[in-house]
Image 1 (tube, rainbow, N blue to C red):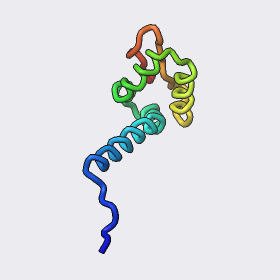
Image 2: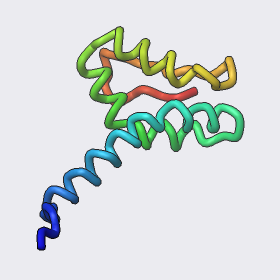
Image 3: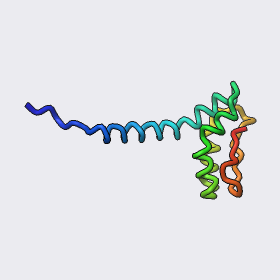
Image 4: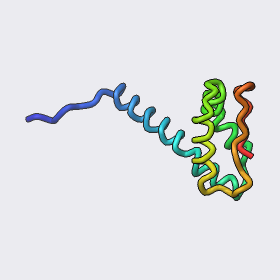
Length: 94
């Protein structure tokens, strides 16, 4: 009898980590939308520090604009990311 292919624990762990990473990336928008109404701006800024640092360090205005557009999609109009490509790691959701 053929039980089919079995996945190794390493492959399964890699798939879980990849899925968690993509959920974290995609979560920036919804978390920003919620925090713009109910608070937690500083928490969002810290949770997404690795992403914002990378974008600031790259100096890519296109990536900064894309993150801003996605984060502002359903957020309160007064909120936006403040990026500073000259000082990576200083981005704030405010």
